[in-house]
Image 1 (tube, rainbow over the protein chains, first blue to last red):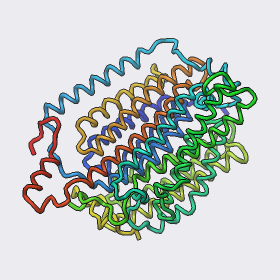
Image 2 (cartoon, rainbow over the protein chains, first blue to last red; image 1 turned 30 degrees about the vertical axis):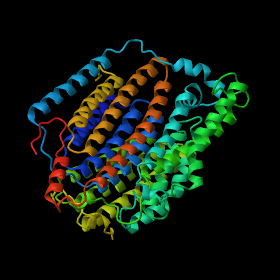
Image 3 (cartoon, each protein chain N blue to C red; image 1 turned 135 degrees about the horizontal axis):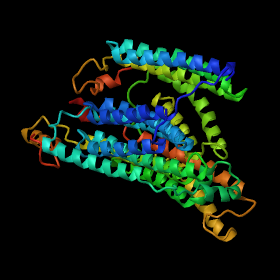
Image 4 (cartoon, helix red, strand yellow; image 1 turned 180 degrees about the horizontal axis):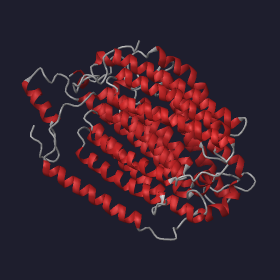
Length: 324
Length: 114
Length: 126
């Protein structure tokens, strides 16, 4: 059988990019907050496809789990709690024109920059490939995250833990010690409860698989943590469990164990490998495994707590504004 | 190009046709419930055909099993969201009312989806 | 048929467009939640431009995408999510703190109307 002439795959990129831009315009222009939030979830999934087309499968997985999943839940809850805003007067025409011109200008400058990037493109592919064997990891992105740019990753996991602390501090004084109740949005329907019973076991397997596969294939602690956090929030949403109160010691340990172990191993590297965040030879693989395992746990705990919101008193939590 | 590629091309194209039909339905159908019907058809049949078409390209056994599991998970999620959306429409949180504050009344969002 | 642009250029332009659209929404969005959403559009556009550059570098170096920018985008995505979660919590707290008995007294009503119509650009007529 003769080979069919397959069209250039880039012809699929034009509609995808256009869809992204049109959806973004719609998100800005649509009247209701809730519609915009739902559209934004779809947008996150489209962006995940864009990452696949850009050859960054690791990023695509993160974007799908965070941008398409957890972000949607977070913003939808917010939209439900905040209610639709009253009709505000539209900004005056000259303002819209001015801002529009500014934005077109920014886009235009960026477009020129994108089209005039230097050739040959500077890159670190060879540098990573040259040293990748020292980490015994097959996935170059994982090697960058846990070894070559380990400081970034360490700081990033500290930022996650700090974000949860800041979030908790938004609680009114009276609510301190209570559970987060942002996800308590009415009685869950039977379908949601069924899903929350069936999906989490599967999600747990997928999460652990993503973590384990992340050493050699796309995946890793962030993707795995996001999937696990999504499963936890699904169960909380269906009231099959409740987020732990802020004083729960287990939660706090789970939140900080990732950055803490990372930091301790990094400090030990000063003695054992002559560099902060260096790994001694022979112990590299087990140390990386330990770091990634606790990081998966901490990322999952932090993301789930971020979606669950600050602690609140029991009772009616829909703010007064929604009643108007 | 052997028989497997032909099978893949045929089935995936057929699935894509269902997707197009479903999205036309999403855009053209008059009310929320019939639009949902169009979408669940896409989920079930369209994605099913695409997955069936991709099976010959996947590795035995885990690649194929993953694809099938993917389809089952989408079915589960699609069924659940369909049920919940229908419940919400039934409870009056639909998009048919154009009042800006629709759906934000505490009574509405607290009502069960049943 | 061939195209004269690469997919890196295509998505780079797309990212530039997203940044512009997001910027407009972040400045003139009708509600705080929408401005937050637009802010996320900007960050997503920045990441996509970054990803397009990573794609160019990756292809030049013999990989699908440069792993270093990929790793940075992954950490960036997670931090952006954390920032969004904080902003959402602030918004909900702000809504809860708004005067609850706004309609009971003319003075509070006036204060609330001023609050709702707060317009940093001074152009909107409440």
